[in-house]
Length: 271
Image (tube, rainbow, N blue to C red; front, top):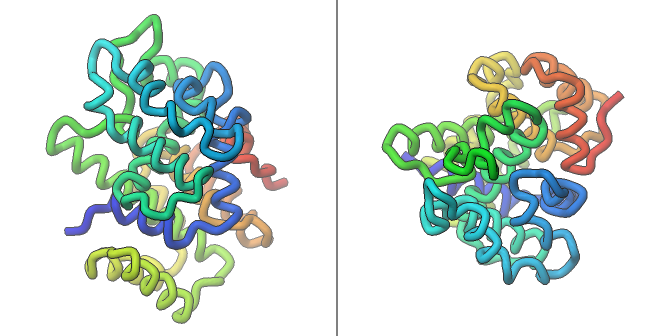
């Protein structure tokens, strides 16, 4: 069985176009998750200032924020190392970032985006705060502590991959040539044969939004699936815009939540 978190990083590194990069950069910057009041604002506030100026201090900031009563920073490598790796790849042009670290950073970003977009009581209940410092951050912002949590994190990474692939097929732009190109790129990235086979099979399947939605169990997962889908497409065709509208409706996302996702990623909401 392949490591879905590593595969997610390899997919992002191998197929991250300019739009995806700019959206991730916006999310990591002061206009996105780096804004004051977000659970990760202290960690992310230096990333959007250009170059790699904020990268050097990210681990120290993460230790201060994530090394609270329930866990040390060393036990939170997804948030500490993953988000740092993702920021380095986006702002510093780093190409040698391990797939597992980059995939972990993507999951951490999506988890934080979900907490921020849902807001209010859900955010307070699911993330550590000064009033509730012992609360565990959700998977994606911390490493799994049990085999069951590891399985859950792998399932989360798989769902994110399926969401991205399903969205990319929305306008019918993936053909056999594109599948061959992507799986070839994954091979050069070092992806295992079974991982490449999984991607190829997912790309060959017809678009099935209903099947994707049935796998979503929580409001946080709904936001993560929507955000991952938005990262995967240009949103420049009627088919893609219609897909996102129907996905938001099927996931039961409130218009205000959808707007927050788009604002964080710096993408106009389809009308």
